[in-house]
Each structure stands twice: as structure tokens, then as C-alpha cells.
Length: 88
Image (cartoon, rainbow, N blue to C red; front, side, top):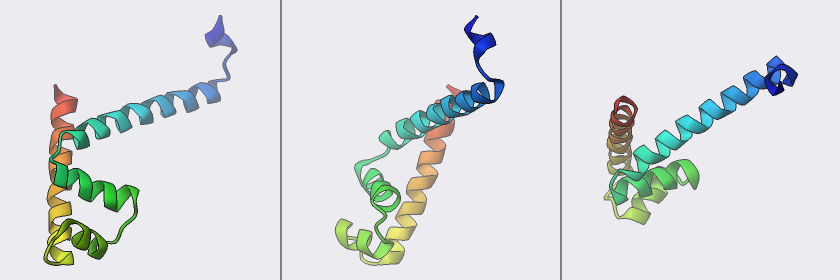
């Protein structure tokens, strides 16, 4: 039997990786359900590692603080969407 041949430690590692992948897919689904501006802010900040002042300039916000506030609202929306996805 294959399950008897797998090292229990390796099996635990595999289970953790599968769980991480599931969580990532759920997060991606939540982010995809956001508006375009929110997706852009989150992509620029978390993936492209742009500063908030760069993001403000790129997306036409009046100030860095305005961009920060919008990023916060986008994160809150993403969290809410994620909860909806998980509970449905």
C-alpha cells in the first residue's frame, strides 16, 4: 500500500502544502471578485512591491494617504469576499 510506504513526516509536509495551495486558490478567487482598481492596488503593492507613493502616481490618487486608505478598503473587501467564499 502506498500510504504505508510514505514517510509520515513527508506525508505531513504534503498535507501542509495541499492546504496552503487551497488557501491560495481561495484568496485568488476573492481578489478576482474585487473591482479592477482594487486588484491593481493589491497587485502593485504585494506582487510588484511598489511603494504607496508610486501606486498613488500610477493610479491617479491625489496622495499617498489616499492610496493607503484605498488599499485598506480593498483588503477589507477581500477579507469579506473570502469569508463569503469559505462559508458558501
